Length: 204
Image (cartoon, rainbow, N blue to C red; front, side, top):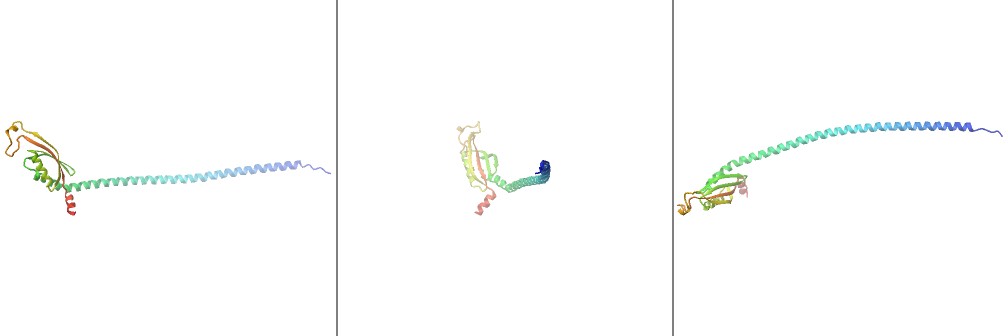
């Protein structure tokens, strides 16, 4: 029986298979590298596009912020202008009222009462003065209560002082029944009645 040597054939087959394996491995590595490069290229394109969109959004947001700031500034200017217009309207309405107030102060002032200062804060009037007696101060407050332009008189301070060192109380009262050289210094508060209050009262 003849003998056949198969070793060279097996060695050639092994070599061929080894070469095919390395060729396949190289092809796989090449394909993987190309896939990575392609994915990187695609991702870079996506990131670049997204960055461009982000920059556009930031630009638009900055423009909107500027417009909002301008609108807020315009609204603040509008509020200031409306406040000034309201003050001007109040001053225009109050111009005749203050004339009535001073005229009414003169009308309500009884004999023997002198005013030293008149201060107004809003609708509130602070009237300071001196009178020959407390009775005169009471009469002044009653006149204010009956007034058309003044209301709610409130006596806060009254103080009797000796205003003369030459005449003494022992000399007796004067012709008006009051002691000379005495003065009742007072502070009275009252509220001003405006035309709008009168209109509201007439409407009711």
